[in-house]
Figure 1 (cartoon, rainbow, N blue to C red):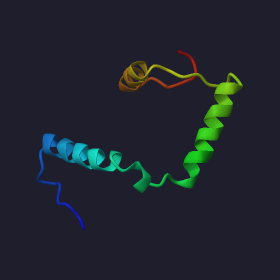
Figure 2 (cartoon, rainbow, N blue to C red):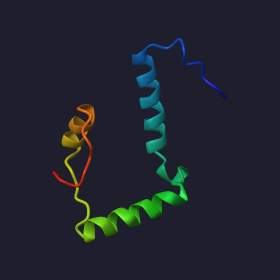
Figure 3 (cartoon, rainbow, N blue to C red):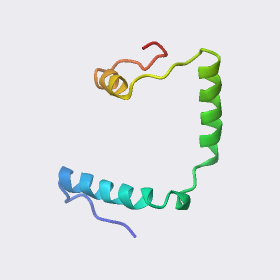
Amino acid sequence: MLIATESLSRIEKLRLIEQFWDELSHRPEGVESPAWHADALRETEMAVANGEAVFVDWNLAKERLRQGGAMDSHP
């Protein structure tokens, strides 16, 4: 089933996304993660444990991305 979204406003599209996310998040067991997710998580955990990567505050990360800055491992 396809939903024609071309004629929807930006707000209507965002509300539709929110509705889908709300429905999916209430049944997380019904959403299977792809196999590469586990690999990516293991790699990230190893990089953090080895001091090769650090966590960055989400708001800071968004701001850096908005400014076109790279998301390197330095806070």
